[in-house]
Image 1: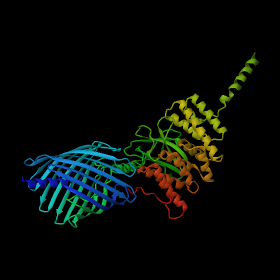
Image 2 (image 1 turned 90 degrees about the vertical axis):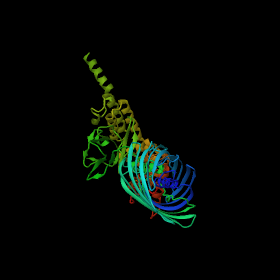
Image 3 (image 1 turned 180 degrees about the vertical axis):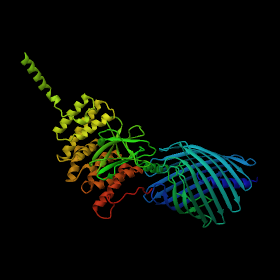
Image 4 (image 1 turned 135 degrees about the horizontal axis):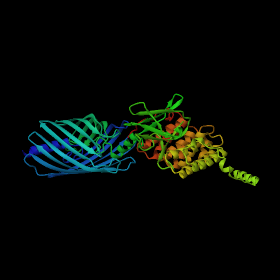
Length: 386
Length: 216
């Protein structure tokens, strides 16, 4: 194993792990100025302008860096984000090497409170002349948001380099706050004299999480980018595609297209995409939940000359309600769909109070109604029939 | 002796009569303990005498019973609601409907005062007040400061239809759910609604379906 091979191995491994790796970009000081069109999961398409400085220092086996970004959307909302990271590479052995790294990050979106995370990772690299691989474990924490938790990630990857082409693949399992998901990533990079092309394909075949916006969901994603060196100091970057959510780093899934200029480029960082931050993710999750915590949603559509009281709830074996219109007697709803339960009543326009019970549990305020505390302890849902 | 006894019995009956002259509310039969039912019936009598609807009072008593509340809590809750209905009647007038009074009571509980309801009535002569008052309560429940919610509902009062109020409330609640501060969400939606009222070209709460999503 030559020194050159070991350096190549480290470089490729860094590329493989460019998302969140402190080894990104090697020694570099860059300033990205870009414009993007992005559609985050749960949001409308929006234009965005991005300014992203980054600075890394490599000192022997130690790499330290920082990166920030300022993104402003069409709406005028802004995201400020910053990450600092460090990695230490143990002295190389004959065919393996240990890397210890850590990172801290924080972000703030619009008027939302800020969020942050810290991660520590241990990675063992294995390398040959043109191929190699690694295994890693990552743990840490997040703070400042409703989704705070202790994430844990296990990953294994491999790479191969042939002339100007590098191939890589990883399998990653991530667990966070009881949820989990697995990602399969394949990537290819071609590096020419002035042009660099990269494509990534990501499959998420398994995910155990909620259905809300920002949750990890199965799917196939892919994106591509091209870097064209205009001169020694300026590089044009183009990119587009889609990427999955990253609950561990609080990034929301998105489709995007971006164009930008990179000034004083060293290395081969990808063009920055205005990633959605924890605060925005929390806002999106609130949207998914519509501000209600009850799993049962009530709607009262017209039903001929009467009204249907319809409750939507997953996984119920029985749904009951009681309210002003039932003389506060318990009424069992009939199942009319896989997750829809219904009864019909005659309701004059007015204001009504109602509670719902699922599977014989506690009486709750159904989503879709206004919560009002009662003198009797607990709360009641208030609905208006226009 | 028999006459004296008879007189005493009659006298006793007359003395007891006011307490036993309640119109017994049949919906409460078997749902409340006798003592509490008698107290609630007294409140119902007072409400009838004041020209107030008794249905919401009975409903409130039944709610308490269904939830296993202590009898005294039930009586207290019914009494409080009777007071709120009375205030709403004062504000909305003698012709106010049951729904309007109930919605008015709900708004009072949310933080509005009689003057607010009276102003709403003044701004919407001849128009139903139920939805406007209910939306006021909904906005406060969503986190909008009471004064701000009242100002918003009043600002819409002259021109908005019920459907406009419903759309307005939905949009504000959605904005809040998406992360906007309640006051800011209200301001944005109120501006959109008042722009519409000012002339064509604005967003209409009643005819424009609000987007399920928003821009980031």
